[in-house]
Image 1: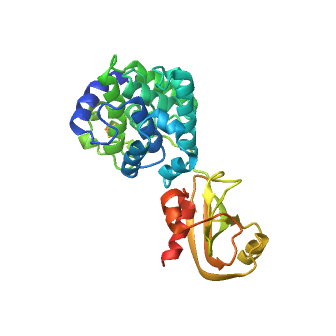
Image 2: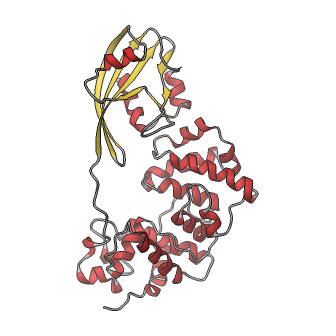
Image 3: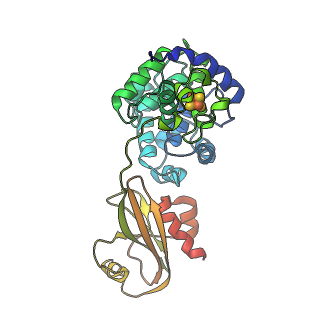
Length: 345
Ligand code: SF4
């Protein structure tokens, strides 16, 4: 079989996209800042979940300057629940770089965009094509899936050479510039999200069906080729909701996963230590256990089997906050936020 001709895809995809695109808060004629914020949020998070976060974030921090100057705790609170907090920390670093080196305006150049914190070739391609109308591909999981099926490409999607190949092959067939570039990028994302889905692609309604090799050969399920899944490391963790007359204890994590984030004091169980041993280690000797609850939290590479303990103590070994303060202004990753539910039943 000859080489697949990607030149065939822009025209049918563009007309399909204009008919079928979803109305999303970051669509229309987004600024580079809007594209950036939405794309970073959409990494690892579903569109439906992102919508609300996006609107709230843009209201609080409507431009690069506001983001650069935002206090850390407020920033993390705006991101609370989205996970992968390094994303938002990098965004703030990049915002500071944009202020320092580009007068507060995003550089209109892919290489310069890639020089900003947390911006790789995918995000740079998305900003360049969607906001600046440049003919630059942005290859995400949706694009890998659609492209691999179209040409029945067996490369591993984690292979950097395959990414480079796809970026240059797709960039070469981009419309020349402007709105079509913006729409072409989004049309592939949209096709991957709505039609060429990971499971059960809706080939009957696909504008690329007539020349899709996976469809012709019934091999859709074999593409794209994904790397083997690694086993998650399992850890047993105690999380303590220590309630004192001053409030509930919260501290910063100094190491491990979620380093630098707030937590209800926790401890990874390494041997036979009991919750009481740990509380004693923190100087808490007089306490009453109110309730305990088990739950599981899954990170990318780790599974936490959590035992959450609600205890009342007379003195606080760490900083304390009231429940209202925790809800309104203290950021807590989901792994710990779940534990707060123990207070309500
Ligand atoms: S025909 Fe099916 S497999 Fe091929 S691109 Fe369309 S939805 Fe994906």
